[in-house]
Amino acid sequence: MRTLRIAAGAEAASLAILLGNLLSTHTQAITALLGPLHGTAYLVVIAATWMIPPATSPGARWRALIPGIGGLLALRPIQNRARASQPPTHQAPGRLT
Image 1: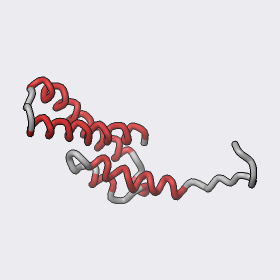
Image 2 (image 1 turned 45 degrees about the horizontal axis):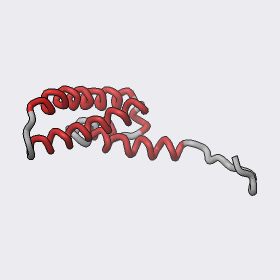
Image 3 (image 1 turned 90 degrees about the vertical axis):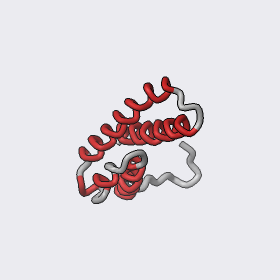
């Protein structure tokens, strides 16, 4: 899940920078550097999502196919289910750890 989280962030951030570059200076060096990074992050998001068991989040696999924000859309229900399945931790009252 850590790989998915990193790749989803890289996918969204690289798309935002690429679109900002397209709307402003259209610097070729930025496009040449971030284009392949964005494509690779997109493929890693898809692969990482398909490696997670389908019972974890039924629609996550299909959400991951949406370019640009699919990783973030797929990650949210997966994290919510993971948090819900963990037992709560209880501490004794008055004790700091």
